[in-house]
Image 1 (tube, rainbow, N blue to C red):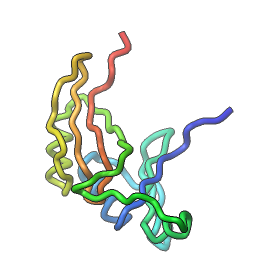
Image 2: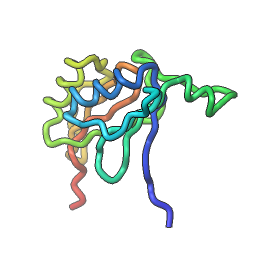
Image 3: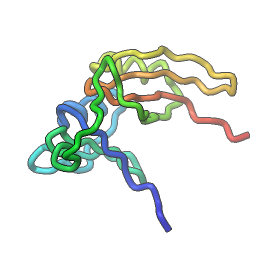
Image 4: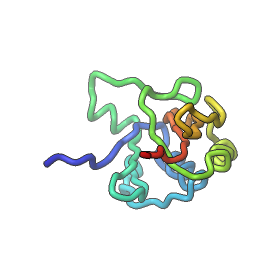
Length: 131
């Protein structure tokens, strides 16, 4: 059986990205490599991790698309909360860039979009009702 284990986003500064998620969303560091080029957040069963672009270059010699605050990555990470407006503002207060403020979707979910300081595309959303 295969299971989803973790997501790694390649960023300019691993420590700064970890700090942004800690301050914005109250997450804690789970592991940071002594070199500082890789770090993980304690996010439950599925790990959210960051690696610096130098490590990315060693893994992908042909290169890859980097995100930036003005042009976030084409993959989003969803942060689920009951209070989107507060989490959205917290992300802005801690260095995130607003891509779209909170809106209610036709199916009842509230969603906003932020770019992290390194260009990680974040969806901040309420849980989706399965009823």
